[in-house]
Length: 233
Image 1: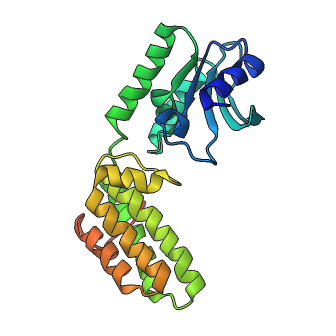
Image 2: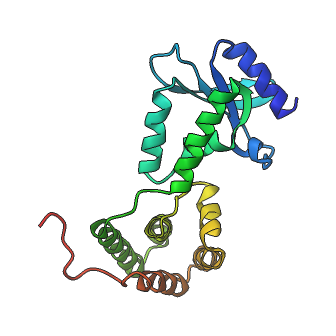
């Protein structure tokens, strides 16, 4: 069964009395793969709380994010605060399954405005903290002599550098498959260098290229930070 038909039937069966529903995710973007699920956001104002639930329906795995007309705003706010706007993205790109046009339009406009605004700007102090943490982890990576330790330190470096570069430049961060997608959207060349540096280390175990990449990245924002750094002094 086609995704849109499966989604409609799912709503009719499981949430027939909801006020509105949108189908988002990779299906809505036309990027579905054989492992994609149906990401559905539901609004039901008769509910006192929000929740998430998984189903298997009409041949599709289904993930539902169920809200009333107050709780979704709280999630919009918390998602944006952490710099990863998962729910606003789902709503913005969603295909209408159910709901009055004026309600859906308002929800989508609200989500799009948040996405276009971008995340809250980091303070100078927070930026310094993040530089320090990257410096500290980089030194751990340089000093590590065991392969198993190097692997997981490299993973942490990837997370920290990804977050740092995007957030200091007013960009949203991503995870999983969105990790590299948001980097490419921000700067295609930097994303290519990022992937090449980490891929080289993972394939060969040779650390120099990755070390140079991280140090070069830090230099664009003031360089390494250790001496003179403090928190709460």
